[in-house]
Image 1 (cartoon, rainbow, N blue to C red):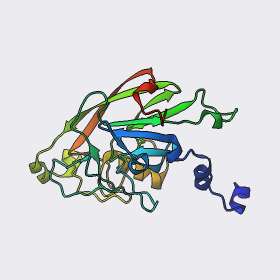
Image 2: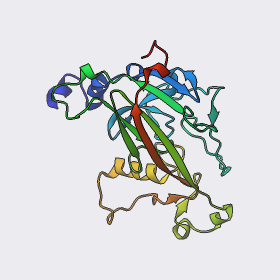
Image 3: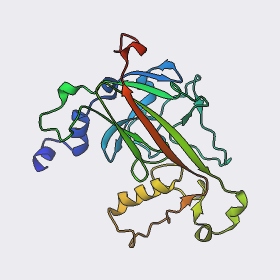
Image 4: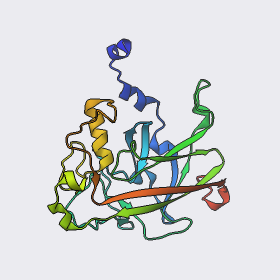
Length: 246
């Protein structure tokens, strides 16, 4: 590390040099069966798995300039049903459509020729992380793998927890939950249990569950969501896509 520092390299700068750029990885994108510019829909963020190209991420603030995407008039965006006056770092994309082809579809070029012989990954492909748009993908995250010649279909089913406004009169210690506008976190303008824990680990490092004493206490959200993810892998059929990208 001393040699790298003497040449003005950091872990982050090295990662940015060796990672596959998003515009090379993402070669064709559609949303609700309409072709979109991948560069406009994805941005690079740091995760526990390294640097990732992410879609619909509105959690921790990133220090990259110009990381907030402009809204697309052809796309639906999330409106908080709780009525809380909370903005997010990034507009959250939603869809009212269902079935095959709805939501996001992407064709990836994983550049198998760039894999080194000593790579610890036993296949050519990509790891897909699935998490809540408001959460840093670490505490509660699902993932799937996709290899060359495969098509991965994923279905995300939400479970929504709602809370009456009258519960605000009960102390957070007794109700064991926070409303989004009751806690101000450092790296995001919307509270979530997962992001609260992530910020705590930023400052404290690893601490056992028994010794954990967060400030603020990381209660669950009074308005919260959980997701179940199901997936199916089938052979990739190039005839279903434009010849210019397959």
